[in-house]
Structures are given as C-alpha cells and as structure tokens.
Length: 376
Image 1 (spheres, rainbow, N blue to C red):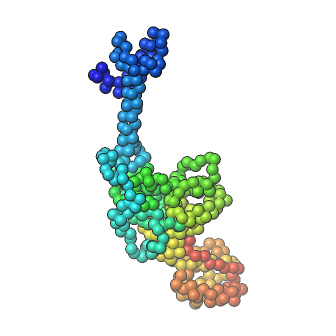
Image 2 (image 1 turned 180 degrees about the horizontal axis):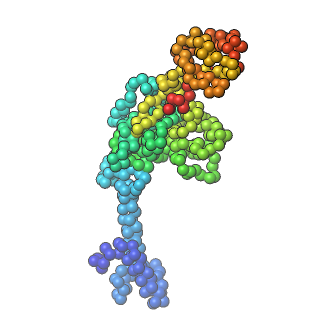
Image 3 (image 1 turned 120 degrees about the vertical axis):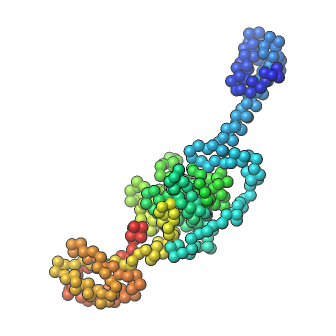
C-alpha cells in the first residue's frame, strides 16, 4: 500500500481510484457512506475512499505551490520575474513599509536643460538610470527623472523615443535591463505587487470598465496614475472634458502622461520632459522650456497690397534692432522679436498704431513661442 500511495499524488490516478472504490460499494448495494469511508476492502486496491480524498487535497496543494512559483519566476511576456530562490529570501516574507528608498542613489541631471526640482513636494515616482535593451537595440538608455505628487508630468518625444517602454517598466509589463524606479516608495525590481496596488494605468488600448465613468476610474485608481496618450482619438469636446477631469484629480496624485498634442502638454503639464533616443533631454515647466528653446515672440502683421515690406521692417527695427523678418505669406508678414527685448514692445505697438495708415497696415498681433516649436 505504501508503495502505491505516491502514484496517487497524480490527480487523475487518485480520482480514478476514488471512482473505482465508490463503484465497488455500489455493486454491493451499499453505496459510499460515512460508515465505509475508512474501510479497505480486501478485493479492491487496498485503499480507502478517505485515502483518495487526502491524495487529491495533497496533489492540489502541490500543484498550487508549483503554479505560484512558476508564475513568479516565469511571468511570461508581460511581467517582472523574481529570482529563482525568492521564496527563501527574508525580504520577500518580511517587508518594511519604508522600503529601500535610501539604498538607491539618484543622480539627476543638473544643467541648464533641467529646471530646479520642486523639492517641497514629495516624489511619487523616482526613475534612476532606467535602461531597457531588446537584443542589440537600446529602447531606454539609462534615464533619470523625478515625478512629483500633486503635479501632472507630461512625457513628450517622437515615435521610438522610449516613452511607452518607460511606462511599461514602471507598471511591471516588462523588466528593466538595469537601473530601477521607486513608485510610491516601492522598488519596481523587488516589490512590483505593492507598486501595482497604488497604481492606475491607462494604456493606448481600452481597458476601461463599461459601468463606471472616467471620473470614477480616477477615483477608483490610485496615488500614482500613468496615462499613455489618453485623449488619442477623442473629438475636441471630449478632450477638453478629459483635461478638466485630470486637472481636478491631480491633487494628492502623481500623474504621468504622454501625448502627441502639444496644446495638451502646454495646458496640462506642470512639468514637461522631452525624451529622445531613450534619454530625457530636458525637463521643466512650459514657460521654462519656451524660454530655453524659444527664440522669442512672433509679430504677425496683416498688410495691404500697397505696403512696402522693407519700410515696415526698418520701422520695426528702429525700436527693436534685433527683430528679423521670418516669413511673408500673401498679406501676412511675420517677424521674430527677441524675448529679452519685451520691455520695448509697448513702444513698438504705439508706433505701429500711429503709423498704420502710412505703413498700409490692416492689423497686427503677437504670439509667444509654442510647445510645437520647442518640441521641433
């Protein structure tokens, strides 16, 4: 009997033996009852129905443990695998609420392309030298960035810059090749389960619940919200409603958002990071980036066909010598005015108002550098 019991750990074997024993008692006209549950008939396989039940329970437990282990070390295409001996590590079974935060060093760029960090706010996400390689191709090349609570951080970049790959690593869809990130105090390398408990994700495909609203989704999900082009495919009215929901919901949350709409980045972004070649090249507020990369202001003048553009240019340069002619398109002339000459704009506008008839000007206006120009 003892030699046979290990074979009964196979689920199908134990099940078939249990059915055989039940059939044995049915042939005797007794049926399986509590009275014969422990009885071992001499002309059967010398096993009781209780033995079969116990073997089924033991077999199920063993299979559950194996499934749990493989799910952790081999999570498949989407997931972060744990070390093969993770179940023997003390850190897996006994975790601290204030985890490894101090053990990771964050070397953030400190140059003119990065605006001063708002250190008075808590960082909901800290990205440290995060790198991802797919074979020989480097998708994210060791980038570092802090995202702060109560702010919307917009991540811009051309296709292939590494935005979606970065988000996939932050949310545990793929493991990083090197580097790490701390999300709400938990390391994505060692504590992805806790990261996901405080994480809300909106990828480029639809994973929304049909029975709750967009606002309720944001309330249901959490302290850290990651949105990958959330307004893609929306009409203008729906986009503006989404902007309002995000602006209302950002308090107490860390929100990371990617978009291809520059106006969306300009309106929503408390801080905007521009990514290229797998690295964050610059980061700061909209005004900081416009001042950093923008050449100045645009003066758009609508003229009559009789206007002498050379004369108009001389008048403008008499007030702002560094003003340059940008474009002439039909009856619209555009000049570039340096931003460090903004104090002279009032004098220029008064002069244009006075000489509109003489210069054959219909109207004029100014515009600041746009995020589209900064991005390009």
